[in-house]
Image 1 (tube, one colour):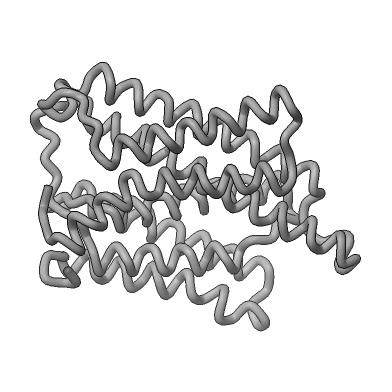
Image 2: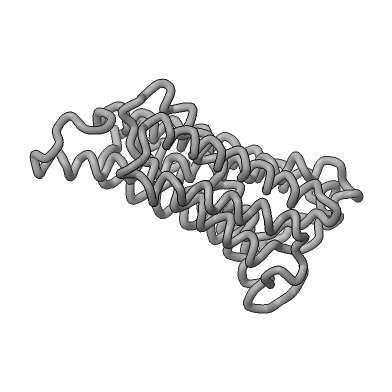
Length: 265
């Protein structure tokens, strides 16, 4: 578990990243807007270096916690880009907490050694899956912001704070649609190239079942949006359910193997 299989460089990077994420949250009342942005940028860069070291260092490792950490980094990347277009977007404190927890979780559970030499396509397959995780996580964040904005409007408090509800809704479905495309590509690659990627035929294991159920949930969401105009709470619930199913697919199955069963594969 913790530190026994992690290099000192990885520990140092992780601690520095967690501290950088904590800085804008702990000092939000004293830091200026520009200083908070610089602290978040520094944390984002350190987080990226931590991920790169874990994947490309002396002993590359991967597992459920690094997957969560990479997903958090992708969500923060999306947030940084969106802030340039929508300065009124407000989710910094929640995302800094997410980033700090994610890197510390990856330090505690660094995963298992990676074996990719047998298939040069395996990293691409993983990249598609992690990118889908990141986009669906971004959709969840926007769905949460959408719920919060709707609640604020009903309570008639801070009517001009944050992004307009329709803008948040549009962004939420765009991220969900993009994630659905990548998830479809990931599943198709698994179906048709499973022997090339993993050296074995397609299997209906827990990871596969939850991934397919997640795909069905998001397919229904996008179909319901296009045909029946689904929106609001109904759409948000489907996003939450689909994302939870996808989380259980890889992260959940790897958590059981690595933590509960203590098996490497």
